[in-house]
Image (cartoon, rainbow, N blue to C red; front, side, top):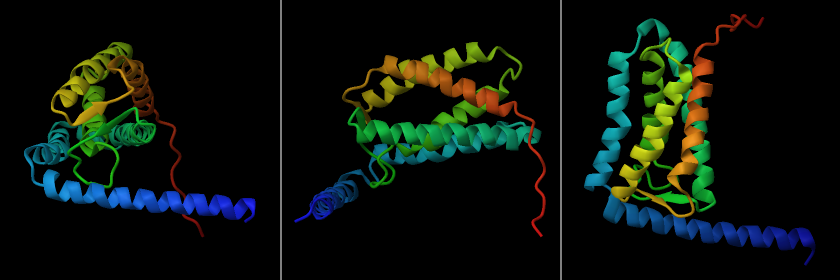
Length: 188
């Protein structure tokens, strides 16, 4: 067997094992997680903050704020997937069994929190707001989800999240202030 064939065989065997584990995860989720109290909490946390934001948002800034929010969502998802894949943490009681991240955190809580903060005292000092966001996320929200036993840090400390949250907020703030978009031109 050549090198390429050996590599292909190893990868295919690994994929088969992963598939078996995913099937087991779906079985556990459907038997024990789906419709549990923590699952319903996750559903609420996935929907209600968006409704609150929709009501509170400054309508003339919707596009600008969503631009920053989608950035936060994308980075949160990417970092959460990496953390899960490297076994730095994992989640229980997921909304969907095949998503390795905590859907409400990445898709709702992080971006909506940032979007609301960007609008509250919009001309306030972004560094102070970033530090407050980092403190709240790292030292209140993460421990709360850990206490609920939804979030399980294995090789991660809350303190590691603090500077990441600050940077995430500051970049979102920067993006929300951009005005140099050229208009679309129709392709002929």
